[in-house]
Image (tube, rainbow, N blue to C red; front, side):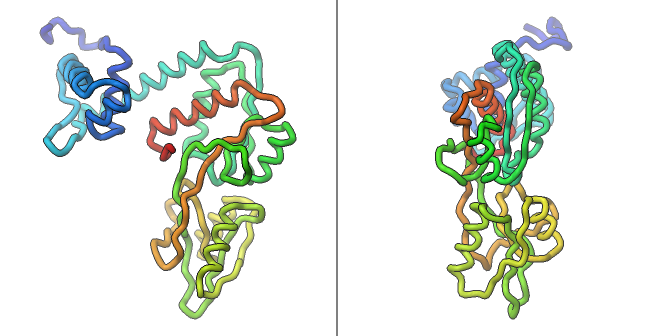
Length: 292
């Protein structure tokens, strides 16, 4: 079909083509994208070629060793993501439970994903009859509320058994190192806290002098103390702020931390697992997590 016979204001294409397009971007190659979406590499290549022909633009610059987006590709892919998000929301909106319900969610405050408010708003639009109750706090405190039947699902670190691992992220040392003749001062969350235990264990394995100088009851207090230059702490990478300095060396290596979901054992809320799946889906799409 020639360009003259095509409407400049309408594009009819299958959502699977857009999903293949996004997969190419996220995976970095046609072969990896094909594996992700369960199609052959030639099928993916053909889909993209037909889409480029229909749009009459090149979406990618290809060489034997690299694949990059064109300026037109960057623009179109942004819209493709929005289209797929709306399509997924539309499916959720008609498949969600129709009865009035409440979902009580607890997030350990040091694990709150960026743009959580956007994810909550999208979930709420897809489940208009659901009343969301969000509580932020320490992981151990939230798990106590879960055990008491006051929460339906908790997202926290490995503070307890029975959780399902969702993703992992690195822990980093951050803050201001002391002068050589001064002890290292730690800024830590109050007990119980898995990051506190990791930091103390790392310090005990060192020959240097150290002390706990500040104990805080919130991640915001820890971040503020670090920014004020009052010592050193451990944070998950997602909790780093732009003005918090990262310590690249001089301190012991740290493990990755796990983010787990814990479901109430008292009364299962069908929306809880739906919320977990929904959150994982959007974090994976935005590249905000390292899935396990």
